[in-house]
Length: 169
Image 1: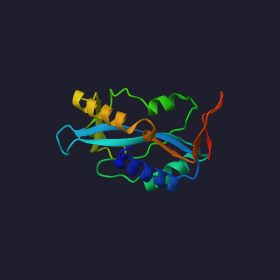
Image 2 (image 1 turned 30 degrees about the vertical axis):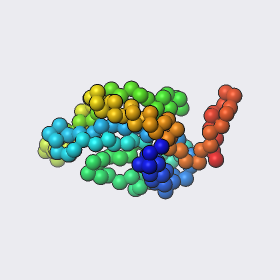
Image 3 (image 1 turned 90 degrees about the horizontal axis):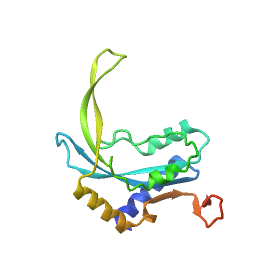
Image 4 (image 1 turned 60 degrees about the vertical axis):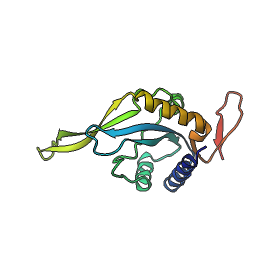
């Protein structure tokens, strides 16, 4: 695993630990972010998709927002949705389907119903990766291996016969 991937994983687990004291299983995914009018240089942005065991979704979201604060590059760093217990999330986390992995930032105008005025806002157009970017990402993913994409907290993976492949550590 590259040193930058280790550092990203360690910092992410530390932040998740400050926001949530329960079990968390997630994986790193990457997008190539750029701006349509070249307001910033294109860059690779890692994202974590995962599942946290929590009894209070609102408190979890509030706590995650405290430790993953918005930046100039990422204005909404936290999204929390209830899990429907469908195991497809694991396949989503480890997907290699890179069709929407290129995110092109745009500035658009939206109507604000409260004020009656138009306002500027940031939006994203999802596009397929360019061939050179896809090659760069696939080489990176191959180099770091699937295990280093995992970001887990309080989880121990086990061999099981039909039961869950992990348990609370």
